Length: 401
Image (cartoon, rainbow, N blue to C red; front, side):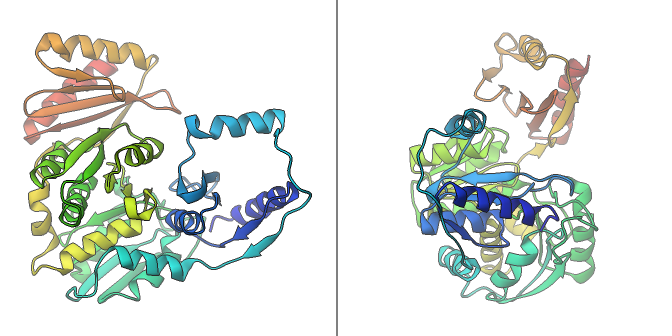
């Protein structure tokens, strides 16, 4: 729905068919609808999106057949080489283009993965941020026992109301107000390409994505006892605790969708969650779907006679800082300085799976360099607010001199 997308999609399709390959155009689509199509049809996929970025941005999101990820190490460098040097592959002369609507099949598939047949009536406010959830949500929620109050469902790639980036709390203020004013049971916020979903409870409070990861993990483990669950290393410590208490195996991952998807494939995990609001499902070709995560939350709430904040309380055990960015000249030397202060010499556990993670008895923090900017990203979690703030402020003082 970005103003620049149609011309890019037309040009991409023309380029592909000119090289002798066939194209199926599925039209307007959320990212998880693209993954559904690539999985269901077992073809590679491409879409034009800049996700949660401002209106002037655009880009291409790619996947292999079966919705397998393409990352730096799994295809992007090859594509870059082909662009610069030409492709060594010989194609037939010309391909064809046809259109196919996949939306109804997508909805049908989602509803086979979560049982919503017997939920109590719910009032749900949905903020689509003028993004693709305005296209997919009506088709999904028309099938549920709920009253939907739509916010910003008009597809508008200029994002006239707020950026479609729910990880920034300022973009959730309209949803929080609406949930409280309308006495809704739950609020849902999607990003621009609708692959991420964030929750707001009945009090208008933001739900930590790690809490939703833990809730979905517990539901999946009831269906798949003893299964593997993936979580990324900036997720709450509560996720691993809850997975293990439910009889599952919690497997820690680096941050990033290509790493999580590969780890899910390697371990046969049934579910994976990232603290950024991405949720991955084995039965959805190991791809992420904000809509499927939302349906799990709605099913869990609709199955019980209590409100969302009470339902989620057992899954929220720690206090998190949220991600804090600092501009640094040399990320590696900053991390080395932090490790010298807080590392094994101070009696703490250290690992380097992704940046630097330091763990104490009731707290942990992670610092890692941005891949695209001169930033060091800090996440802190502790059992109490005071302890979290103390660790946060000390580490930030070290980073910022």
